[in-house]
Length: 180
Image (cartoon, rainbow, N blue to C red; front, side, top):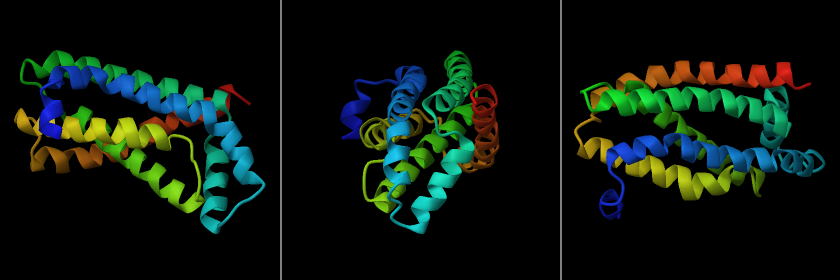
């Protein structure tokens, strides 16, 4: 299946789709966050749900706060996309691109776990299942097919992914600072 899709999407196209996929995913979250928080606030089903709601509140639970955070992350993803697209044709590294791609997979898995634990819809699950996961699988496949992804890059990019989590969390702080 991935090979069939690979014929329609070359690596350069997949690189440029990176911020677009993120935008669609985050739009789902922004649009549904407030109604979802209200729905589960009145009826928490488990300690996991209570903990998740507390964390979401601390990180920013309004659509406006999430939008500020998404804008911050989009800036970083867009910069990464431009740099990767530009330098990849000159033999440049895919380290930062791969590190953020790992975070896309982690984000999708978190949405799946949350949906199971919440026993209902969670913001971002639909685009995780139908956009994020297929995009990531196809991109990993394309990177490997083009000789850009190997085990060394995969493991080298994991610590960079951890650093990127901290950088992305700055967006949450900005959202809470600018939107009260």
